Image 1: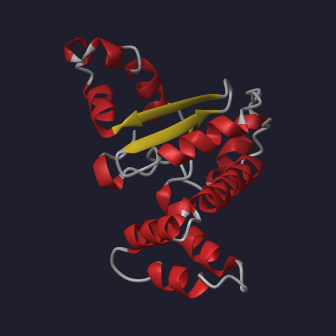
Image 2: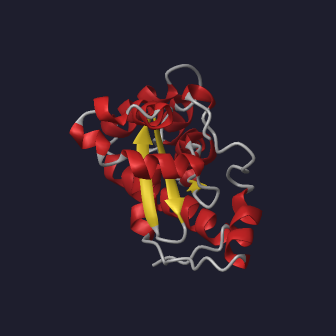
Length: 184
């Protein structure tokens, strides 16, 4: 069963990223065939991760199950008949994600570390005259907002989005490979 709200990390008695390697190995050893998953879909799911949104992967089907705190709460309580119709369709999948030991939690925001991405982006080009402005933007309170404002002002939005996408893809590849999940 998943912990609720801000302490949501993984099923009880299940390791969380990056310790899920051993968990998946045992899944593979028990004859569960792992389906190839879309790297693009994993990257999109990683981008959705937040304190309120969670994504898991069923390695036997390749299905990504994404849900929010409210959906998780309803699935855990079991009062599905009172849930809106759009949610009722998802509740069986969410309940399975919460209870099935084979389901793996995707890396969360703490493991993705977007602040480190911003810092690395700021330091990437030593010759860039904007380097000092980007470096100072990523430190202190309001770093995300200041960084966003700086890349807009400096005309670096497209470069940042490509860099960020490549970093998310790197995180996804690493997680998939560590968990021995085939991808395309």
